[in-house]
Image (cartoon, rainbow, N blue to C red):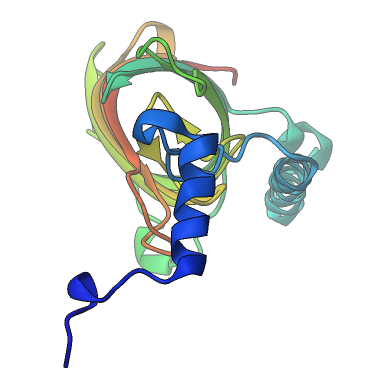
Length: 234
């Protein structure tokens, strides 16, 4: 069998090669096609809107499920949080609101443990320049469990963690960090202290990981750490 490399070139092959050489002289052939990043399309915007709607519906459900006489007041957040962090050449700034709710598992209904529904809005700012993918917005919803040390001290340590979902406005940031899907999973944990009158304020360090759980590759995800400040509204 004659190797393909030693076979004589047919007239049609020579004609095709000559045509390509005329269009792209000196071997300047076109680069392989690189699909553009998937930015905030109407489909993703609808997904963000649906997530916001689900967040609101969950808040209403949690509020109405409480045995409090003023159910309308349950729509007011129990806490607001501001956070800032950094990871993998990305600055992260966020704000969130949380609502307490009665735990679904009886074993978690004990002093020192709190279950909360957290709604987050985050802005990711990529530091790499130049890049066509400078930033990403994220909307997240996750239940969290918090343990706070007993006592009446002015500083009370606590630890918390949670797992939920996150919807991104774009599937890329910087030049080479690819998320592939707008739908992501989010895990967050932190440790901090409460302080101030009736321990209404809190400072904490936290770490957060966002990825699609290998639903689709590449799945670079983003892990970052940072600081947060929290204030109780009631």
